[in-house]
Length: 421
Image (cartoon, rainbow, N blue to C red; front, side):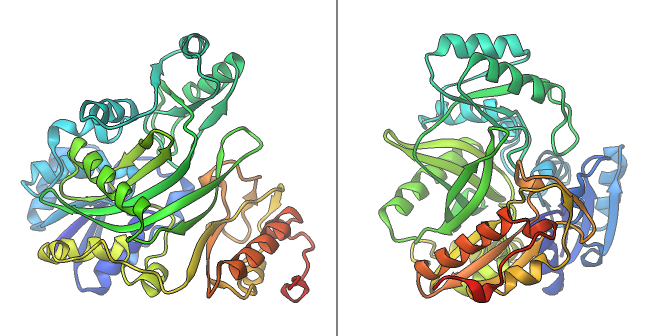
């Protein structure tokens, strides 16, 4: 068995490690010449039998992969979705519905496909100029919108806007920038800002059969630039009414987008009018630690994906409606508030907190840090676990206090022993 991972970054790196440890030969393909430094930081060449890097001539690449008798092709992160599906199709391997490929990257086409299937989506438009965006907002009667790139990730250039001027500025920023994957932005998506509880649902699919591996509830902050900043996320038990509603809605989204043979990461808001699709990606959810998730839940999306790639029948026998968590768990994204050089002692200081069970720095110890404005500018994340949510909340509050004091750039922070009981 030989599996190709296209853009094996973020959780894709964890999948490569898992497959490598299971004795599977993995090959790596880079979808484009440019790789964002944040993503490149997670890449581990040692888990691959061969790294093809970026190959401009896809015909040549296909011939090379045929010689390796590839059995599956899968995306490691969002940037690899289109290339992985194209390669799988050309190699006559299982993949998602070809005719809906564009809708799995373009957020506007995605919403159209979901809406055509009778699923709720935000009121939205696509604008190729700032004037178009501002004019639509002025005529929409909406009090607030979200302006975002059409095909990026990690809250890249996402902004909440309440005025015509803010919409104009946010659209200009997108159109004059490239995505985190190095692609040019030719248009911006302007969406109604939804109000409610936000969730993400990580699934794995085989031959059109879907299973939920993980379901988490988001909590986000609004950053100084007016965009969302990931704060923390907590798991949702599979046997709750909200989980059942989200499962049904998400499976309908996967069907509408033709996601039949890959993992997927779907973001949904439960509003007064019920579940509403924010967006979905035909790939693994990012910024997770599968080993930690499995320790407290017994299953992770990465683990379930690896199993499904090796033996697809294991996915069909997996009961996704009774997964439970052994204790309270929280995945906390770090938020840096200061300019400066990354403090090499920050991770060790965070690990002192009683409920912290794992710390994952996302920057080198000598990196030049800017204040966090999106996921890509976060210095990392940590998992907290304890018998009660109150214990986690105490340590989380202290962590945020430390961050305001300059934790990530060498500021003077109180010790864990100074924590108020």
